[in-house]
Image 1 (tube, rainbow, N blue to C red):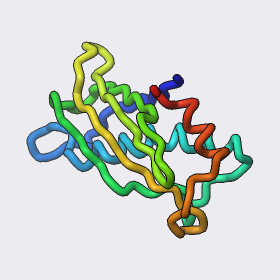
Image 2: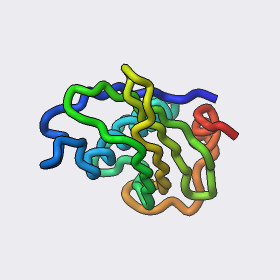
Image 3: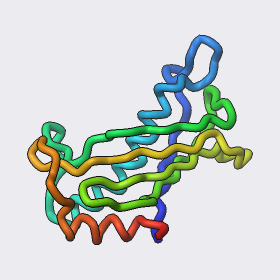
Image 4: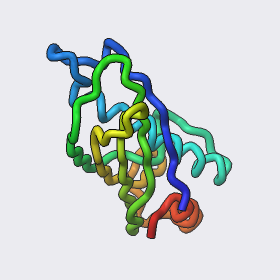
Length: 137
């Protein structure tokens, strides 16, 4: 299994009025980490990312917040594929504060495969095989 790791420095703009990373900003962190996997998949099938038809859409997101992240924290977002279905896959995430190693959040997203903006009837086998490279099962 290959887990991807994405580094992010918490910016002032990421904070809420209490000085913590705003809950919605975590979605951006997850998306950026997942895109590292998805870009590798696309490159292997010789496709370029197209913002009009990205190839996946998020159907579900779950986040469990474990600790607050604040300005100037350096976070590491780890992502891997935990399940592959007929038309979707599930990605799992762990966000830790790098200096202390403390767990900040755990998350899960379900991605639906799309082609030209339409839900795919079945995931192409070549995509399924590439996603397995990032799978823990």
